[in-house]
Image 1 (tube, rainbow, N blue to C red):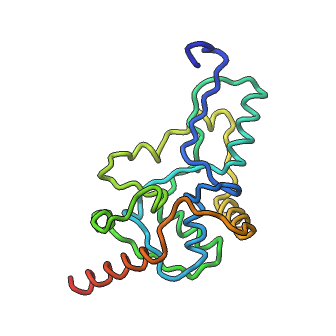
Image 2: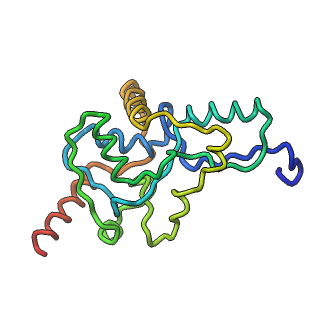
Image 3: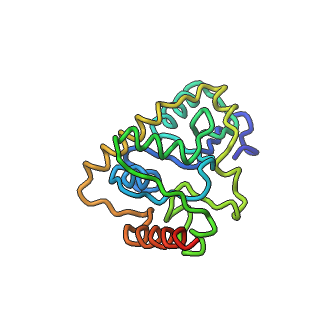
Length: 194
């Protein structure tokens, strides 16, 4: 498209779009799991970078871009500052007033126990997949064109409130409760025998 209309193309690359009305469950899995509390399986490195964007921020920005007749290719994902998996889960805990306790399991152990990344444990992609750039895109160009983000706290809270209003929502992503408990049990046994 850009080759056909070089001065009239707006190409937006958002990666993972989250927030209320997201039926994929990739973001809401963590929101709901942390809200539930207890011991929560947390994947891989605490400092692993993650990115996503609230659908409302993305929509508002795209509308402004179209109205201003801007063109180009933009990575439109957030947040503005780097976010780690640990900081995200901690913010879920704060926003939801949860008593969750995170149990960080290393990637090798998760893979040995056939825990699937991305869909089964959303936002987690093991280092072995060599996809670091997937969740650490440069967004300077979009920021320069006015992309802004609401507080993460708000996205978490609003997603949870929307989820609670759903009567029967089929989960497309997320770790099964029984499997999570089984893997946590194996991890505890391994630590006790170490």
